[in-house]
Length: 325
Image (cartoon, rainbow, N blue to C red; front, side):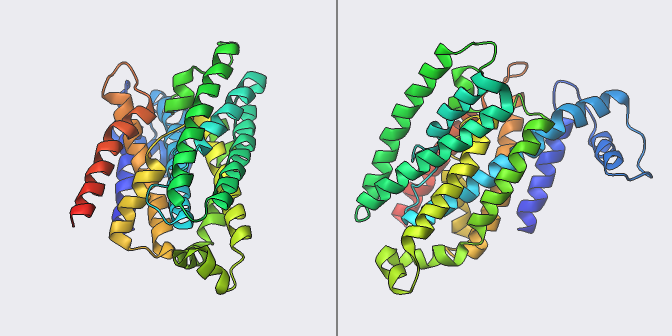
């Protein structure tokens, strides 16, 4: 955790300083210090104030929130379904939330997009809950059904976007590949309480998730109401994923790769896994966003494109390495 926290702070500082307008790390820290009321910090320039606090800081904070909540959600889904392949995007929750978010964006901007994403994310998570109830013996069926559901819902996102006013609804690549380009303080303050509430509900479930390693029948014999736990955690996952999708679109591989990596270091106990995944997810998204902003400058690559391009091969290598071991 100390190493992950230091890495996250370093990535955040780099993201505040690096960009089209170069700002020294010291001046970026001065802007933050002044905003936090540290009167002894040197006065930054007006340009640094506008760029760091007005543009880059909400982007960094929103990226941290999105990465943390997606990683925790992935860890919870993997614990519930007892498979490393569980992920909010693979299960279709992300694409489902994107439909509601796109409809909300057409109706009323960012707040409506986030509200629509949350509503659609919860509905899609309940569909996944139904799949889990009918396929409790074979978890691979749930993953395959989720993949098919996600592909179908992704197509419907395209129909919604192409039928809406292009001036009010972001393009299809925003919803399916994700981006922090339009991050604002307003979006951050809407996403934050939803993510905190859903994330807290998932974090406090660590003991129940540890029991799920015995299977639903084994957990039930120990007195766990497995139906209630599955439904509650999937609804929390729908809220968390829906809020992030409404603000930044679908970002792949965060919920899949980060818990997988963290589990190799912390072990399977969710008391350690989930908090570490939260910090690692925030670090992963902030670092990936910095790459997305700079690797093709002045063009900005979609964030989900970067996470998939680097996360996909890394995940395949880790899986093959573990299977050989």
